[in-house]
Amino acid sequence: MGSWWRGTALVFQRATVETLRSRAFRILTGVLLLMSLGAVLVPQVLAQETKTYTVATIGAAPPELVSALDASGRAGEFEVEYVTGATRDEVRTAVREGDATVALAGDTLYASSTSAGSFPAVVAQAVVSVRVARQLAEAGLTPEQVGSLQGIRPPTQVSVGDLHNEARGAVGLAMGLVLNLALLYAGGTIATAVATEKSTRISEVLLAVLRPGQILVGTVLAVGVITLVELLVLGAPLAVAARIRSDFALPAVATTDIALAVVWFLLGFAVYGFLFAAAGALVDKVTEVNTVVQPISGMLLAGYLLSFFFIVMEDEAHGFWSVFLSMFPLSAPVAMPLRWASGEVPVYQQAVAMALTAATAVGLVVLASTVYRRALLVTGHRVRIREVMGGAV
Image 1 (cartoon, rainbow, N blue to C red):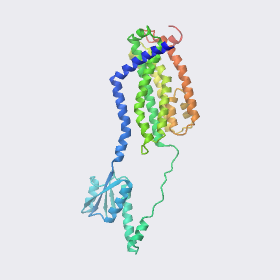
Image 2 (tube, helix red, strand yellow):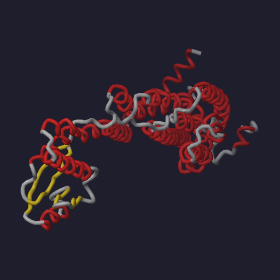
Image 3 (cartoon, one colour):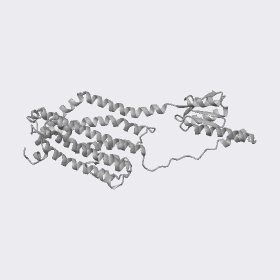
Image 4 (cartoon, rainbow, N blue to C red):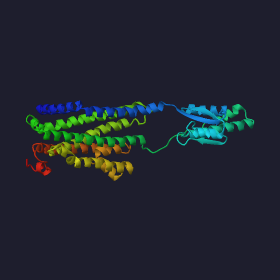
């Protein structure tokens, strides 16, 4: 048994070193790292930029209005600048040309249709507050009484929503897509590697000193480890940021979701990786790889699309098809992360789905190994499944 693993380790080392040395791997890893760091750092940089609004008034803005808007700016973490115009048309033109966010002319408030946001409401409220204060003072109230009235706090606002966390749901949607693409990418890489070795007769050289199972397991493990590294490069910065930064867009629970996604990738890879390897052994030319792997790729893609439709589009995490797809071993690797991120999946269903997928993986590894072992020795034509399963070789 020890010698078997030593041979497998040699195949694993050879395939891993070749991949790590390839330019494509370095470029892809760099792109994934930049994407992940960008998702973490860019929102933080943008959040640190103080938003600035500009108010245009006819003549100098009233000191009371300036004080009220500056106070609102300090509370809302934005700055207010002021420009003046001589006429109504001038201040309105300032808004139209982008020199001002809003313009105040008598009882009319002009607002930019592209950059004003909720700022016009803030200005309108400040104007009302200033005018109410003046009328109260004219009615005989002292400045202290007016200040007391203006200091009345509004009710504390508490956001109430459903239990579904939209940010977490977005993470689940992204994870499902990433896992689907990762499995397709890894599977295509495995099938191409096997087909290349067979068509160039490298497999015959390897078979002279190694068993077919050693070549199969070593190749599949090498691609799996490389793909896992790339997934970790993409997901680790996001998971860490979600855990240590309270102001990050992703909730802390996303860290657990990402960790579970890695587990599901390993399970999904165990299910599909050996199937792709067996498919690659069926062809006689590398150009035939895309054709022979289409049924496997189609099965994986169909599982994701159906999961997206029933879990995301129909929003039925407890519906029959959602539960079925997340438990069915061939679709669970891409469906369960989507459904789990909804926060409505019982833990026992997650555990059962993992157990079923692992058991299926074992059975498919045995089946794929048989096909691979027999098909690798057949050259000169594309091998049919019944040819290798029927023991013709």
